[in-house]
Image 1 (cartoon, helix red, strand yellow):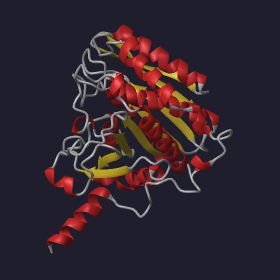
Image 2 (cartoon, one colour):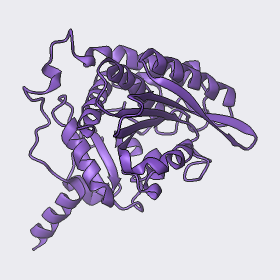
Image 3 (tube, one colour):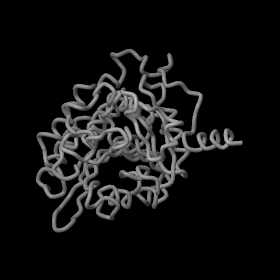
Length: 324
């Protein structure tokens, strides 16, 4: 009986599939490199973006709006270079003006997919993994989409004010954005939020979990990427995992749990749920793996840009599949 309960819990939480984590022969990764959009991204470019955000524009917390503006312009420039139609979504908090940066491809198409990442950091920390890595992934994803756009409207959003003291409140940039698209919920196939996608660790015991029992269900090495959301987002979570698995050799897992479980709602995806818009987070699990989380040690040299690149390739495949 106990075994049955464990298997049932695993199926509910992890949504296992028969799809392999190894690339298939039919994967678009097997395309001719001269025509594949995947050659437009790469570890070197990801590193450049992370260095710009975590060092050139440091610090980039809410008390340094001038640096946040420099970040916003940097992001906007790269989105434009990728071919996106760019606009700023401005809002005021405590007397300062802050900006989300929005880049759109395929404006006016019936189906819409949103991919986002926050560009602010926690205090005067470098925030290389949290969350320069997510923004770097967003910018390189833009290049891939610009080269071979899926058949849908793709909205890429760089949010500000995700970090404390605004986390969980209406001042979050993603809360502002979610409210602005609430009227379009019927055509939004899903929201994908990139939250810390750059740190990996192959050492045994390098991966921890909010509940000790989860160690029986998931790896003890931090060498994978995860799709995370709450229980009622199972359909989107499964689609994203299935799309990402096999796109590269990077292992992909998923987790569904209650919002009360620490980590499940720890990013911008949380702000779309109240509007009935499906949303999930792509993450390396943050502080459950990266012990430099919210410290001065969260620097660019600690990240694995090859595996970051695999995450971006996987997300691109997921975006393409959601358009079908």
